[in-house]
Image (cartoon, rainbow, N blue to C red; front, side, top):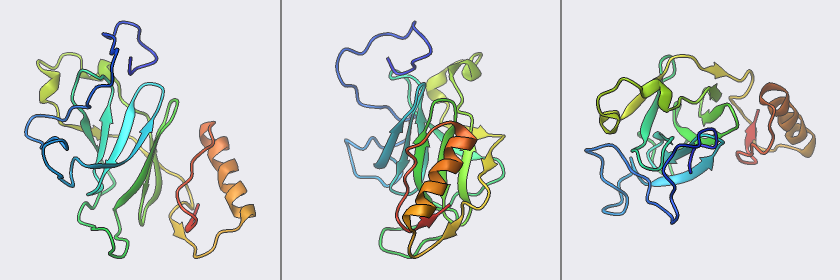
Length: 180
């Protein structure tokens, strides 16, 4: 079961390869930067992954393909390659929470949104043909786009406190160079 809120999903008794929409190269066939996932996060009702290119993928059902997450008012830059300097708009990490999703986007900061679910896809003739979900409403966490060369324990604790106050969870850990 992938979605902890529904009880009518077909059971998966063994590990299952996550699917991509038609037209995308599965990572088992070839190393494609759009589908090769470098970081996963699991929430209550979904799984988020960020690909090597910086594309955000979301799975809500183990038997359906992922949907790409795009934001209405935030541009994502997928052109960064490892080893190059950070580029504005590149997704560094994602976090699938209980009732919110987060992405750290360079030059923007931490972006939060409410994850969609399969109920939003009701009425679509073939859900396997949907490849992108446009997030219409998102929030940027204030002062979360700053980079600092050295972050001390006090700042790290303050960052955790902000996440707990805003979203009711902790455990968000980006890197030691990120200053929220």
